[in-house]
Image 1 (tube, rainbow, N blue to C red):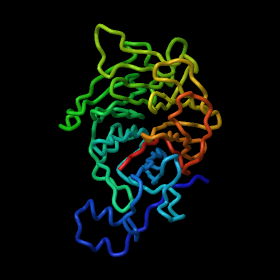
Image 2 (cartoon, rainbow, N blue to C red):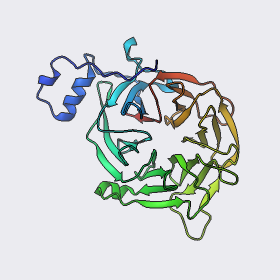
Image 3 (cartoon, one colour):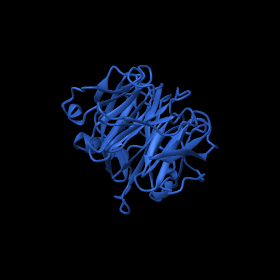
Image 4 (tube, helix red, strand yellow):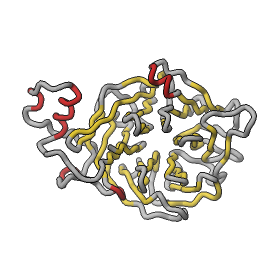
Amino acid sequence: RAARARAVPTRPGCMAARLPRALLLACCVAGARGVYSGESAKYLIASSPSTGQISYIRVRRGGNLDTMGLVSESFMQVLIGSGLVRPSGLAVDQARRKLLVADPGAQKIVSYPLGSHQGQLVVGSQTTVVQGVEAQWVATDSTGAVYFSDGARNEIAMVPADSGLRGDALRRRLYNSNNTDQVATPGGLAADAFAVYWANSGATGQVGAVVRGLERPLPTTENITVLPRSPTTALGVCIALDNVYFTQPDRTMYGLKKAGGSAVAVSDRLLRPRGCTWDGVGTVYVADQGSNAVFSFAGGMQDLRPAELSKTVELEDPFDVAVFSK
């Protein structure tokens, strides 16, 4: 049976303490342990649509768990246990310390402020970024702009950073099936400083499995580049340095260069791989719903080749993953 994320026991006496709400939450989840010191903390975050929860676990470089000396901490802990219907896509805005969650069940994308206390990850109150969308996937870039794919409407859209800050969520449609044939039931997406990359889960024929489009389309230039034409479909996508990794709905994860070229099978031993993410250093994590687990591998390779995947942690029905670095 798949492992479910566990709630962390309450620290004795913390509920009686007169602390601000954020510190009170941190106290309640921290447990009876001292402040951890060492390398900068990284937290692996995962969504589980069937449980309606967002979970996390602390990790080290290379994908190993950071249990802070406690063997019992080798399981994911519940980060968000209520307020979501079917949480799916995840993204972390590192600079602004925010977690973005696409919740197609609630037809909205929401954000949470992120923080940590005594080695534990904590979140603040939920804020709606955009509503009235059945987006399963979400991404963000260094400016704080939010990108999402809407498979039902066959479009890639974005919410500018300043719009999100004002709370009016001015949604801009970047690409859709009416202005390009390279949007075919879009799935996962990723963004860097110049472009947004998306996977086409309904790709056939001349439609690319992974497509790169300018974040700010120009009327006088070619805005879209098809990366691999084979394989023909993709689901999740993530960027690691100059590599682009993407999953197929069944067993395989592929990699290719941002400049394009042939896709290389990184692994064909997954069962139902979904979303993936890079930790900003060298490790790529991928959620495998079929295995009820999250796997990792060294994703910063210069020459793409098959990689040895390691099981990082078990979790029931993982859909997408993200990493927050403190």
